[in-house]
Amino acid sequence: MARPRSRPAPPRVSEPDLPRHLERAALSRHGDLVEASIAVGSGSVDGAHARLSESTVEPAAPDRLDLTGAVLSDVVIADLATAELRAGDGSWRTVSLSGGRIGTLDAQRARFDGVILRGVRIDYLSAAASTLRDLEIVDCRIGTLDAPGALLERVRFTNTTVDEFDTRALSSTDLDLRGLEALAFTDIRALAGATASRRQVEAHASAFAAALGWDVRDDSPAEDTRR
Image (cartoon, rainbow, N blue to C red; front, side, top):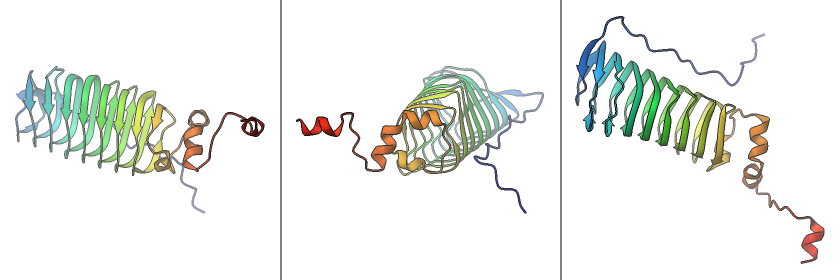
């Protein structure tokens, strides 16, 4: 007899595979960089529709980093400080984004496979209509996580806080919320099938009750009749 599948299945992630030697290069729109240590400079940096593989992005503080439609494979991005990182419509496979602070991370309609977010502070993360597979979010602080219409598969949170998580029309498989401290979920019904801790269920009991159509009140029936 086949053994029952353990759930939730963990993300299938690994650190990017990088060569020992990297050639220094500058990021550019539609650029194709392989085995490079990439400088992004300051100001507004345009790397839209670029292809980056087996490379690192050097620590930097640009005003904006535009990676719209870019394809990243085996890439390390460390200690990035920027008001805006655009990754919408892009494809990231085996990418590590660690450290630093990002005002807005726009990943709308993006595809992430085997991505690790570690120790990043993000004020606003938009993942609307995105596909996030094998994603590990560790030691992050996120203000608002917008994921309406997103598809999440094998996504795990560890020691991470989110002030507000927009889950409208979200669908998921093997979503592990046990390491997430979230203040509020927009639509808790969209989290059906996710794994949560007993403590989390207790903390969001009112939201679960409202989703079931319960009328939750603090007073007793006798107090109602005296009014």
